[in-house]
Image 1: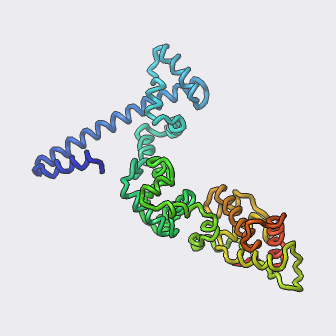
Image 2: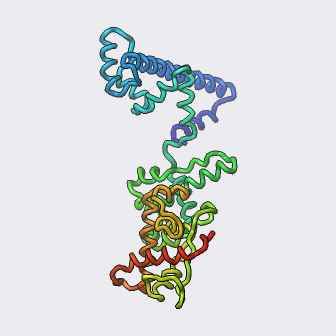
Image 3: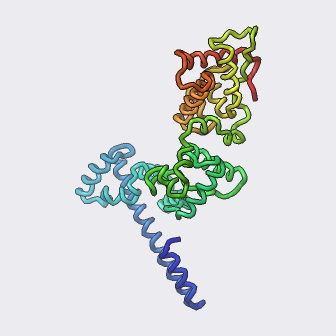
Length: 336
């Protein structure tokens, strides 16, 4: 609550029972009058939109409404000026067009009710305490401050879980609430008390590649390749040495299921290769996030194959990808 609301409640508590009843009636009457004015304005705007649509023969664009409304107004018709109409629809022409479509066969009161229902429960500005508590829950989930993509994923899962359990919408602030208040995600994390070292963890490639916190929430039927061994005498012919192949296989198997899934479908390990969009859909992640995981995972495999050396032999990354495909193609199926 804002300071004004709190002050109003304090004054209300100080009133006698009769005065409280009178105050409630006055406030209710004022609110009803305001709602009536809003609905009257909406009806006038919808009538103006329909009139312009009738003239142009289609749903009007911004330019259509500007030009036609001026001509109609000059001809003496009661048509709302563009600036007033645009302001009523919160400077969103898409919302104005949607309201016009809703008005076909519906009253202005019903259109207003539908538009108002979308705004119910929406918090205009979260108190800092709520932002801090929500971030603490996300940090507890990941064991460190999350990246923007990770926070979005965690938030979406909390909302989905609440819906599945029949609970009310949890109303968790989006990442934009943090970034709009503190300009950047990093600045928000620092302001909330996390150290620079903790904040930097979200950018570490290894922590993202080997983060297994998401695994319990993944679909059970995701394809994940199982790799054949690279023992001497194995029928699998690889572009890697036996030592390199064993390091790659050990590193791959140490990765969480989400990372192995990304490599499986993006590299075509025993399955057809998938586009970023198709690979991202089951994880509910952005395409760039899938691309990052793929690159970071390949970097981790390159690091393992070279024994941790900074300088690697030419072509090792390409050989790792081909080696993974050959080791996976020898398998009769995919791991669960």
